[in-house]
Image 1: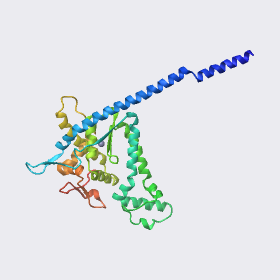
Image 2: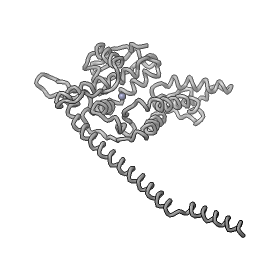
Image 3: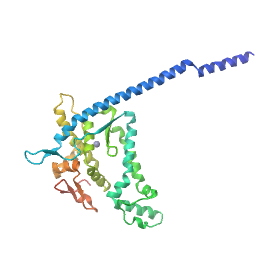
Image 4: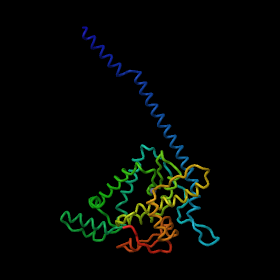
Length: 319
Ligand SMILES: [Zn+2]
């Protein structure tokens, strides 16, 4: 009897632990506090977004002013490219979500790999397909005897040619996400900013990417797959250099503060300056913003580049 009572007591105690109204209250309070904190964080991000949008709007006329050229003396000035100074879409990403956002962008880029490669490097794709079929003891199917933009690959062929490059694209983005303050997505046309590091410099840098002509990124991509060196340095160096010009003009109108950085270090800027010195400012800027880059020779485009409106001949110099 005694023993039973004891057990019953214990049971009751357990039940009380299980269904303690105090605990339920505590849990509800914790849940409410978490919801409140999330709402506050969301409100803070909305505020930061509004501030970033204000900054971007403030920078727009400086882009137009600095990145324009005089067509004829006394005439109107026109920008080096059609997008310069236009409205941009911004998003503020919480630090904890930033890696996921970078990865999602890398996946979007990776998804476009086949289309880009078929357009710009069909010879490389065909070579890989030949190797793929050879490994199975087969010769290349006749429908692949010509590979171009219209070629349709089977899922197996696509995987054989692109899966490693896709994987590396995503892995690299994940690895670099920690050092990145923002990125521009050409597919969503949105600038994503890391919440804790929003500055006028970061915004100007990403706006410059957004204003770059799609031909410029195709040119950089083509040189990359052709095995040229310093492709990233030219692209990021030009972006840092060009946004730096805008920030200089903007900062001159500010009352004090510290000059915000527009990105990459002196080795990047040096590559950009080398490019500008070789072909001239006009050609370099219209290549970046106006898309005036021709790769006419399909066999060795890096040796027969035509840059700027005047189609200045230039060879890719970093090999
Ligand atoms: Zn950049």
